Length: 239
Image 1: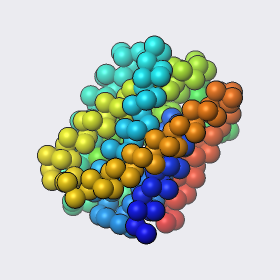
Image 2: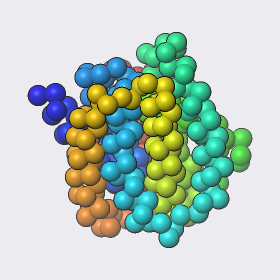
Image 3: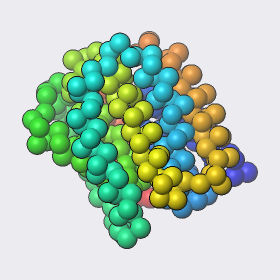
Image 4: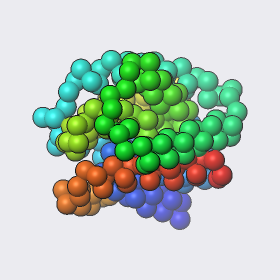
C-alpha cells in the first residue's frame, strides 16, 4: 500500500501545481515523510515536479522573461545549496513552525490587502523572498509560496506571464537542486520506484489542471493561491 502514499498525493500535487503555479512539493511532503526521511522525500517530491513544471514551462514559454528569472535564481539556488548541508544539523520541527507562521501571515496580508499583488517589490524585499524560499527549498523541497508571490507581483494580471516565469524558474531549480542532492548521496537508485510513481501521478494531475485553468479568471486563481498558502502555513504550524 505504500505506493498509494506516493501516486495519489502526486496526482493531487500535479493538480494543485497546475492550477496555482506552485504547491506540488507541499502536498507530497505531507505524505512522503511517512515513507522515507525528510531529505529523501524532498528529493523525490522535487523530481516528481518535473512532470508538471516541464510541460507548463514549455506551454507558456513565449511569456517567459528570462531577466526576471536568472538573477533571482542565482540568489535562491545559492541559499538552497547551503541549506541542503544544514539540514543534517538544524532543528527541523522548529523550522517547520517558522515556515508555517510566515505563510499564514503572508496569506492574511495578501488576502486583505487588495493592492499587494499588483505592487513591484523593492530589491531588499524581493531578495528576502528569494533567500527564504531557497532556504526552505534546500531543507524540505518547499520554495514555492514566496516565489509565487514574487512572480505574481510582476505578472500584470496576465496568467501566462505568471505561470511562464514561475514554471521556468522551478524547472531550472529542480534540475539544479536534484543534482546537488545526488552529489550529496541524498537521492540514490533506491528512490527510483517512488520517483516513477510520483512522475506518473503528477503528470495525471497536471493534465486535469490544464483543462480547468483556461476557464478560471486570474482573480480566482489569485485567491486560490492565497488560500493554499494559508492552508500550507496551518499544516506546518500544527502537524
